[in-house]
View 1 (cartoon, rainbow, N blue to C red):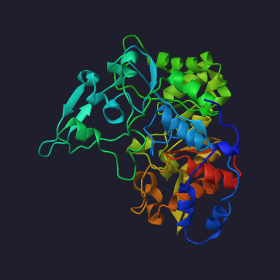
View 2: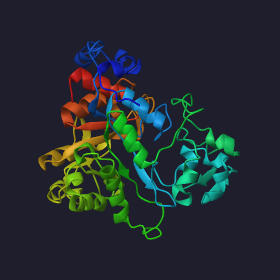
View 3: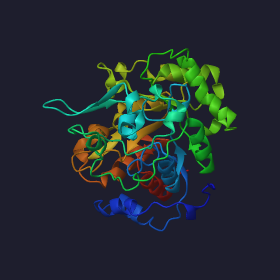
View 4: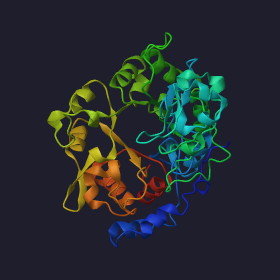
Length: 389
């Protein structure tokens, strides 16, 4: 597929202006509305989160083509591995039962937990892992929208759980899965940069002699084999040791390695109190970390009706860390306050137009370098309007 190079190749569709129409009157609405005829451009500020999974099956060829057509300058492959230790794009090593058709395929017998129907108070469940199948077997699967109906009593019903604010329209016939190496070739052909995330294995490591360090190294080696410059790659991990491995052993890639901050799972952590950060922001910087990526809500708080930078943000910037964040447009309709991703500012969130409210605050108040989105068109429109790179 030819690279998308000009504004005429980028299409954001009706959604950005649909959101603008719902904004209250004010300076930001006027500014965004006035950009309706602004030439669009590809931007690194807009990062395709698993492609464009608001409507396309995540981590598929089709999802990433859609994200690139929306102007996402960086695309993501979440990286895990198969039974024969080949790297593939899946959000988790153990999500095949919700993201592919494996339960309706001959490979259902490989699942570590076969489908069990809902009964009484017990939800339907299953667990299927890439580590239980070979790459050749993986290639026989088809991606679907990530969902499961936990009240289901049949496999067919369990697989048919897509939220009503998403769609199965683009997953009936397609859903082409990718290896990590194939994602590199695709993203390169689309004119995009790369942000692979090394996912935590569901199996005990080492896995048949495959160590965590070998896993981290193999990810980098596939970019080197493809001739991709390190400056185009933003390798990510929630595991700080992975990031430190890249910094030490692949310093050119380590310069842009991204520490995904999952410390919100630590009971003593409080994003409003830097004294609870361990390691501290300065300690992370001293280790060689340059990029940190928490969820959106950790970066912001409120002052009255205004969304402002949180103490977490201020500590990170004081230490010289660059901020990337996730995930815009993953919450569905925002009439309920936005759920998990908007939890620190939920009092200000009551309409889908607040996707732009949050995005503008993250840009102006926080100074983020880029944002992951399930529908990159919205971020591309904003970035083009604000003339961001």
